[in-house]
Image 1 (cartoon, helix red, strand yellow):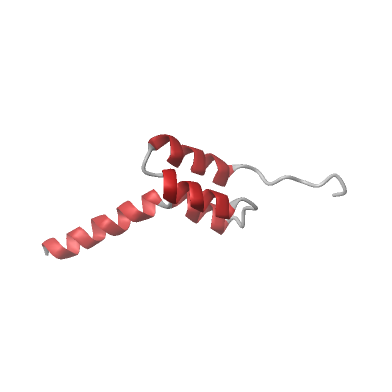
Image 2 (tube, helix red, strand yellow):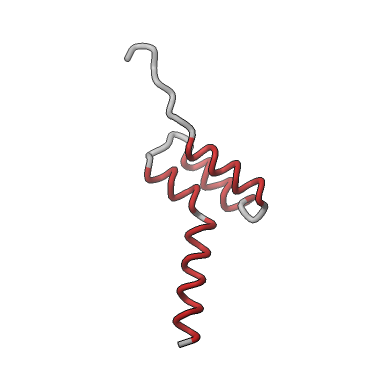
Length: 66
């Protein structure tokens, strides 16, 4: 039972850690690879995680021709 609980906690923790990257890839953000890089390298710091989240949630640029 402890092993199952440990696996569940680890999966949830990894999902929360990679949340900005998951959002960026789900939204097909133009900066998704940058978000992933920042998330993996600097995500352990709160500032890096917030920066990656802000980039992932940023509105896409709309071209003037549209």
